[in-house]
Length: 239
Image 1 (spheres, helix red, strand yellow):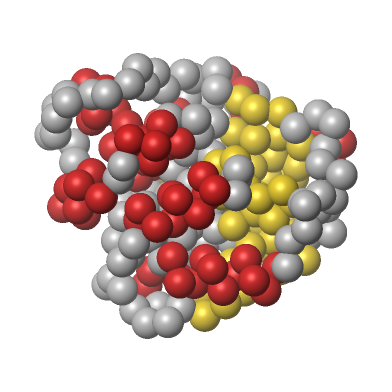
Image 2 (spheres, helix red, strand yellow):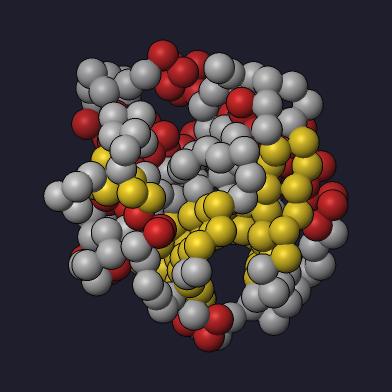
């Protein structure tokens, strides 16, 4: 697979919005190629020129129009944290190997234009809004390590912690404790990656992956007030 640009995923790729936007920030959960639902969510949020749009990652794969979702993000000047799906694609493109790719990745690779790849390469590991004591990430954090020192693998993949406090996927460790249940803050963390039927509310975190691609909802949260905006999936695209 030919690499068309230098794509280096940096462990220190943390973005800080300081000062904060003049208006609101809409943080959107895992879209996974559900372009129609994203368009409906953006219409429902009714953003103004002073507002800012941020994605928690996993814009691509599994749904019907990954390229369309990335195009919307580009055209709106949206920021995004890198999801495990984008990280896998970017690393495969940079290293010119496909051993880690999943079935859904190949359709996305064929669909993305050069400008789409360039957009994915701008994704940060985290986006911080210090004035609002808020931090945006795809997956999550270990509770006992400073968040800026945690690896790309951890912050894009973690869902639960096992009995020894190690990061795990929920499917591999069903008895694990959600990382957000142990996160004491500050900052307050908005994250995706762990699909739930309802928004996952914790004392210092909010999980907004409500499984749109699985027939659930696409969820956004308007900051700093933390007001939710949701639209139902048009149908079940996967699973």
